[in-house]
Image (cartoon, rainbow, N blue to C red; front, side, top):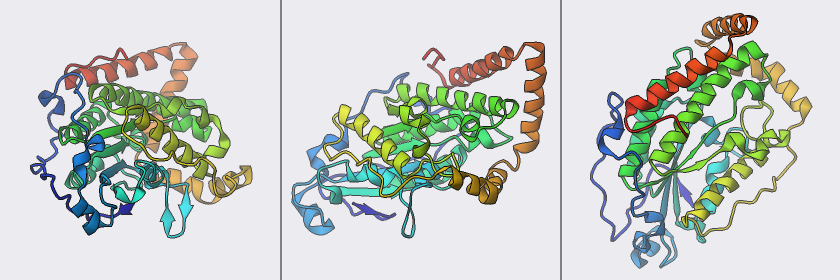
Length: 344
């Protein structure tokens, strides 16, 4: 497996036309059907490599090359799974298992800690399309929910743009829904409920768009290992080494089920013990508060307002109205993309 921004050309395979600029002002759905049929997958094509490419790029002759682009935030960057020189995470672990010959995989990880959906559209998507990926992962949106400017319609439009362009360029796509950050951090209910409501809206959008574009979708928020403390790093928001390995294994199973991977599944045995309760307390006391503050700089005033509203509705017995309004807003956002309803 090789990584980086430069990918050797693949002899015998025509380069697709230059990708159009990402348009976040109009739904990408205008050019696709309600559920996009899967294009002919380059992951299963024997035309992706030739004897010449094996000689020039270090890949054994007759082995098909797979280009994999990963888009996202710190989860995709590998935070929580430290290795010498930085982070590893689930992406390289999955890449090694995509094919029986790991050296045939060309990995480009475009992710960046703190990224939001706007960053993916404007910065990461053009890089990913230039990589001409056969496979692309899109796991993004958690940081959007931690912004005071959170708007589910804008998030839905951007995700629609990203998935539509990747599929239009022939890539198979991986997506995932995410656990509730308020619950993971153990926040008090007046703070946790508004964040949980936002995450539920994000996950619903990802569910619907994954169905629309026939993406391989992982229901990570409902996965059994989410409840395993050993699967999480000291910050309780990012997977530990074990969690990243379990995530890579789950994605690999999805690809195998679709006939898109014939490599060995990622191992789930970590190289060392996971963080204990003491490590979590140290992290929260030393760096945790700063980490939360950095990501909630513009959220805090809004979150306090939301918490006050939550408390008032709880006392009045009308907190169910807040859930209903959130669902209505999400349904409206999806409806404006065209051809999509909330009923998933």
